[in-house]
Every structure is written in structure tokens, then in C-alpha cells.
Image 1 (cartoon, rainbow, N blue to C red):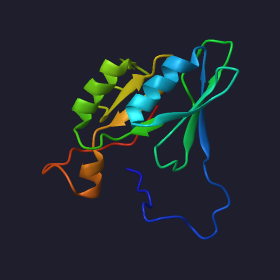
Image 2: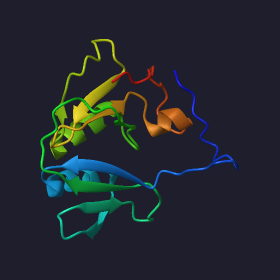
Image 3: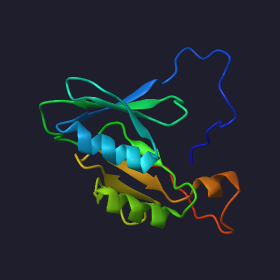
Length: 151
């Protein structure tokens, strides 16, 4: 299991993620999907059809959904791992499926402790088994085993 330092940033930091870019043939459905998933809002629409979404407090990173002419053809080499916040992982997966996500198999195997889904244009992402409350100790009585992601 990977351990992350959730305490803050190093004084020697040289870069900060500003935007996560997602390519899409049709930016609107992808932007609408991710805005609903994250509880964000559309903050900018460009004349080329690209759309920027961000949280209400404009904390970085934002996400730009960029119009591209080609379909997605292979598995992403970079993806997002999400944690349910205020619900269970199973309830969050159900919510995301209702928003338009779909299950995908990228070779994760039957013992995976995460669920692999894809957005409306096939960009893979994972829902980890432990919620935000499980990780921070502010939620459920019985935290589940959480593995590392192996997409």
C-alpha cells in the first residue's frame, strides 16, 4: 500500500498541478459527467468547444475537456483514483453508473479492491474501496481493506 503525505506541501516544491486535461470528441457530455461526479461547475467554454470545470472555491487543479478529432483507442497511461465522500464505495459506483459511467476490464483481476469504470468517452478511472471517511477515521466503523491501483 502506498502511503501519502496528506499534511501539506514541501517548502522545496517546484511545480503544482494546475489543470488535468481530458481529450474528447464531444467535450460537453464528458465535462457534464465529470462536473456531476465531482460536484464541480463549468467555469469556461471556449469557441473551439473545449470546456473547463472547477470546484466552486476554484482550488487547483481544474479540469479542461479538450475537443480532439480522434477516438480513444488504448488504455490510459494516467488515470484518476476516486474515493467516495459521504457514502460507501458501492453506493458511489452505483451513482457514477447512473451518471453514465460503465464498468471496464483492464486486467484488474477478481481480487481487486477497487472498481474500474470509464467515463462517457472511455477514459478509465477507479473508485477505491475505502471512503474519505474510512481513510480519515471520521466515518464507518469497519474500514475495508484498500489495495493499490494497478491499471
